[in-house]
Image (cartoon, rainbow, N blue to C red; front, top):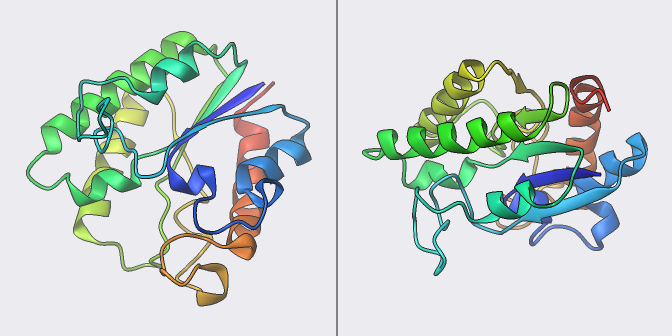
Length: 192
């Protein structure tokens, strides 16, 4: 069983016609994994973590469910939503990312944890908040002895055919592109 810990890009919000079109489900099916999906639309390491969906870097939120799930491994795909609150709150976001990654590294054995690069629909033009969160995620991932797994940041490239009308969330074709981009890296990173 592999836990997927994430946000709307992991739930498939607004974009998928059925759950089997979600990138996490496509990858799990291809790799023979039983998918456990722990994702909530709008959540980040700080963003909407509180019990009442307030921005709270202290709350464990979904992380508690991941750690209690009995999963054999975990794919982390969260943080993009923090890009709207990070500027001026870098220390709070850094502390929350560090806390989450430390808990996950302690819980999952070597070869059972993968941290994905931040999702981006923007192509190469990343907003300042996205760059700030990505820098924090990169430094904290390296600090705990892991490397960011590529794929979420580069698969969409602001291709309208892969996005919902909102220009942010991937549609069925976008989720298929994400799965194609991420799967080879995950099959190597998670040595289940």
